[in-house]
Length: 427
Image 1 (tube, rainbow, N blue to C red):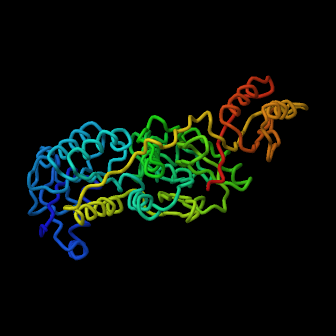
Image 2 (image 1 turned 90 degrees about the vertical axis):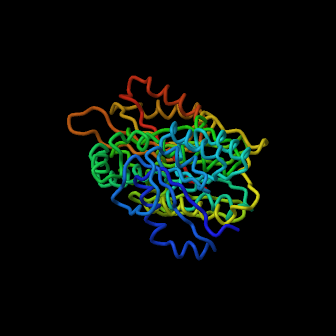
Image 3 (image 1 turned 180 degrees about the vertical axis):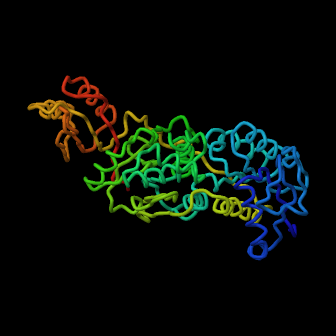
């Protein structure tokens, strides 16, 4: 057995510097638990980072030098992106190195190809840090809940979106809170991946593949962001006993597996509804264990580094053992198209304040087989002839609801588009 395991790290930004700092600070504890020395011997980075001390470590400006270094046993990729990162990871695999990555887009988009290459070379690929930062949710699904049939999972898996929605509950507009999130470093200058749900969809794709054995298929995920939400909807939801959270939801049904990311009304008393700010949480329901919740920092330098190094230690503990790969079952259920998914719905419309309008709307819903659970009609504002009407419905198939909405919007008495938000009891 080797007395030391050599690490090569590519990327010295937020996560990479965290890896260096956590490993340096906790070296003695890590080595004691591992029973050998974990040594960072080679770093690939375009520039140095004053946030960490790399003295005594070989530095290469050509990051591919690290992937090819014959002295590196485990290769850590934290550069982000997909094109260069994919080439880098495939180079390391081809060189016979185990790989640890924090790159959710890479795994969601190219995971099938990467796993196949790793299996051919007899090396491991680990990616705990790709989902929910420091929360060990992939290990929980793969090991702690291995005896369960996973019935559902639902996650707040993007801290930026959760920060924005939490602060909009105080009456602040989306644009104002987004600008604050950018100033605080929670959101990028281009926040599209966070606020439009793409980042969460990458992570949900990975979670569902582990939970249900379905292939990694990002394109099968329904994605809707939070950029069109308005303060009024958050306030009306609260009045009705709900909070709006941007969730990734996957559920096993008799028809197949749901895979969807969208704003969701959930009852205030649910555990996941109480998760605020930039924190992440994933709720998993298993047939044996019941409902479980995993909570913690979903991003950040050292939280993500914690997950990167946990994967690294796992591989180092078994570096000479036979390699086992994630199994994508040939008998796995199909991923349901969104049109076939059933949800309850929140509808907000602007209607002319005259007799018979609600009766017309209710008639359209009734003919479609859609039951109304609750309704709020507000008084018109001074000088206006329209009133806001808010309805909550029972569960109905997405395609049925969308057809009914189109019919309602065609009424002369309805102004503007109807605001539609899905509802879920979760579990």
